[in-house]
Length: 287
Image 1 (cartoon, rainbow, N blue to C red):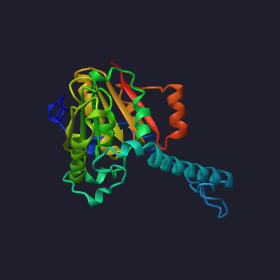
Image 2 (cartoon, helix red, strand yellow):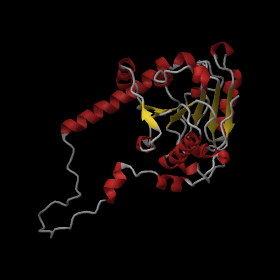
Image 3 (cartoon, rainbow, N blue to C red):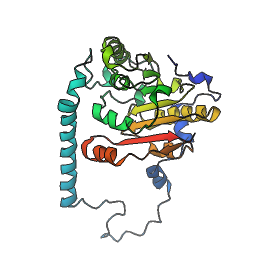
Image 4 (cartoon, rainbow, N blue to C red):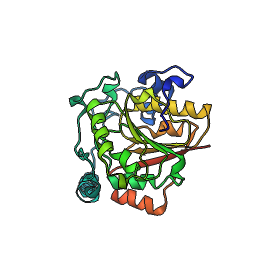
C-alpha cells in the first residue's frame, strides 16, 4: 500500500508537543487572557468584583438543559439505530468506549491522548460526502484509529489505500482483527493497514490524501501533526483534506495558510446540524 511517510523524512527536526503548540497562533481565549487587565479601582466595599460572572438566566439554563438532552438522544439514536447494521460486521465490537488509562501505551504523549470512542457511522458518511473527489487517487489516513471502525467505513469507498495510526497496543490489536475479519464483499478498498506508532512520528503519503481526526488527542499533539502536514505540503504541494470531528484547534488550521474550509452542501449541513451529536469541520489544501 502507499505508506504513510516517516516524519524523519521531513527536513525539519521534530518538536515536542509543547514546542509545536508554541509555534502556532494562540487560541482566542489565550490571547484574551494575555491582554493586561485595567488598573484596579479602589474597592468601596459595595461594588461587585469585575471578574465575577453574572448568573445564568433561567431561560438560558433551560435552553442548555434541552440541548444536552437532545445531544444525548442523538447519541442513542446513532448507536442503537443508525450504527447497528454496520456494527454487527465487526469481529471485535467497536461501539464500546475504552479509557486510555486501562491500555498499554509506550508513547511519551500518552498524557495528551483522549479515550477511545467510536465515530457514528452516519456522521462519518456525512463528513466524507464533503470530499468531492475521485477516491481512487487518494489515501485515507485515520489518526487514533482505535478498533478500526473509521478505517473500515472508509474501505467501503474505492480509496487507493487506507492507513490507520494507533498508539495503544490493545486497540491496535483490535483493529488488526477487525481488518482481517471484515467482510470482503463490503470493501471496495482492500489495501488496509493499521500501524502501531505515535501520530507525531508520521507524515502524509506522497500523493493526495484524506486525513481523519475524531478528537484523538489534545491541541498540543494536533499542532505537531498539523505542522508535519503543512511542512510536507510546502515541500511538495498536492491535494490534502482534513476531516475533523469534534475539532480541538480549527484556529491552527485557519492560520496555517495551507487549508481552506470546505462548505457543506445544504443537505449535508442540515443533517450535521440537526442529526449529528458531533461537530464537523472539513478543510482542503489550496493546491
